[in-house]
Image (cartoon, rainbow, N blue to C red):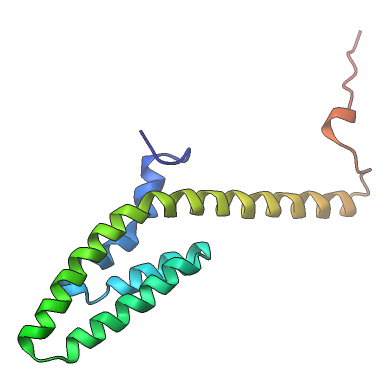
Length: 132
């Protein structure tokens, strides 16, 4: 069963960002959260991306063993977190795309009405005559 009405193929196509969380030692995990946060305008995920970046940078500049004790758990946390937010991201992306598509349709309809001087009327006001 899919998360959205768009189907599993759409969901996996829009989950490519998860590849970043699997890069060794959380090197690009922060980018995954920045990307999804910016894409659906979710400030919380953007903040997680920034926090993960600073934790990674701190662990990276430490000597070998202390750095490993920071980076490896961070990597595990970002993988778990990525799987946790994926359904939420897909739902938010679906809603966002629906809104954008609806707005584009409304703009196209408005442009067509003004170009062809069509009266603005709802679909319920249009009557189809039967030919006799």
